[in-house]
Amino acid sequence: MTTTPTATPADPRPADLLIVDAEIVTMAPDRAVVPGGTIAVVDGRIAAIGPAATLRAAYPGSPELDATGCVVVPGLVNAHQHTTADPLVRSSIPDDVPAQQAIFDWIVPLHGAVTGDDDELSATLTAVESLSYGVTTLLEPGTVAHPLRVAAGLRTAGIRARVGGWGWDADDAPYAMPAADTLAVQADTVAALAGDPLVTGWITLVGHDLVSDALFTGAAELADRLDVGMTWHLSPGPEDAAAYAAAGRARPVRHLADLGVLGPRLLLGHAVWLDDAEVDALVGTGTAVASCPGAYLRLGQGFTRAGRHTALHRAGGRLALGCDSHNAGDTPDLWRAARLFAGLERDRGVPDPLRADEVFALATVDGAAAVGLGALTGSIEVGKAADLVLLDTRTIPWIPRGDLPTQLVWGAAGHTVRDVLVDGRLVVRDRRITTVDVDALREEAAQRRAALLRRVGIDIPPRWPSVPATEFSARRSVPGGAPTPREGKAP
Image (cartoon, rainbow, N blue to C red; front, side, top):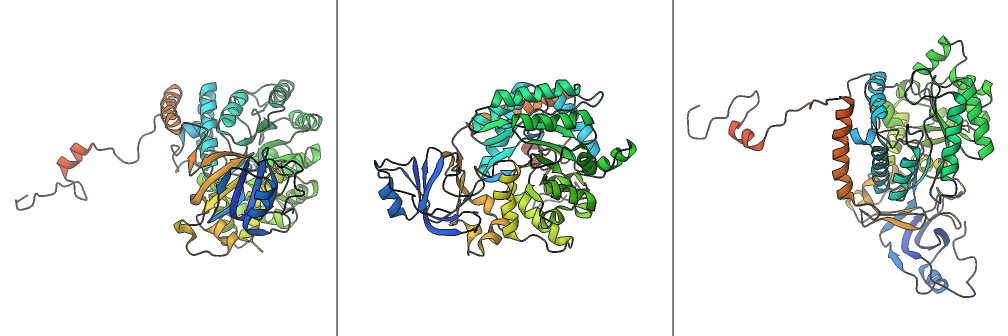
């Protein structure tokens, strides 16, 4: 890791920004932490890391961001985050229904009814919330109908993202098309987003048992030809293995191995219910997995009974973290996903569970590698993108200071995000989003939520009654509903 300017410019010019006097968690290969360090940002990249005096001399007259009392970490990477439809009905799907009912009675109808305007707003909302948590990169693993509108919404917020349309060729599925047509749409999406500095295209299939072998193999060939990554869903619960068996196929991962579609370009969402041979196939091919522990708990999919993610990682497999969708994870808070992952794996007694420092790597440098961006982001190194998060350690969750990685994963670090940069641009400053009018976003989201639910015909009855203040005051209720006697008077 270069910690000082490689050379003093012959004609010194200001940097775009100097982030001054920070404690820098580099997540470079040696995992160095640089106390009292300064970062020079030039053209969206990290130009130098070193003492403030040295960098001020090398880049005279630069604007400065005072990071005194701040820990600076790489921007977090959410490797599996849906951004459409679900955010408009967040925390609305009952938590006492089975996972398949939540998906097919709620989410599929909602996705079938969203408009392009809904999807763009929903993506902006997800990105804004993600940025507020210090997530600077997300992989949208398949938006159903309007991928280019989704890309526009993500771009408006200023987040780094990879996006694709949700391809499938299952019979009678919403938006399903024959394999050849699905691949053509995938190629068009990648082409339309080519050259965008932040939001570009991936090949994204639904996965599960809803994709034909021809579409799986065609997607892998297309990703190779276009030199992009690909992602789809597999085995979050036991249903995929049962469906593959009923169709006379090998277990899902082994079937993909037989098709020849596993490999470093592929990021599988979930891959929870695996056997030993499937774990070996993922490790042997360099296929990455995105683990979304919050979603598995919300939907009751058996992560604590069947998950093999620690075994995958310990065997040399590639692993990242995700938050899934607002119908499952409810929030794109990757700090919470990291803490859940660490805690659940320890609690169920897996051999050699991942330590806090290893889990934080999943959220940063390992996550960046899993989404094909390891050379660009995920660590704070000279030449990489200035995707940076400043955590204010003068806040209560940092009193007193403990072991740094332990505090990052097990503490409340996500609540202390002060500033966020993506590609050198300040998208969060003093805890306020700089790219989007959040008040206007709030109002439009409420309107679109109501309209979407009306179109689908879903009524969400409240668990708790809503009682107007005037009526509540008049009742002066007590437990059980009996009226409260007035003081000094008989009931």
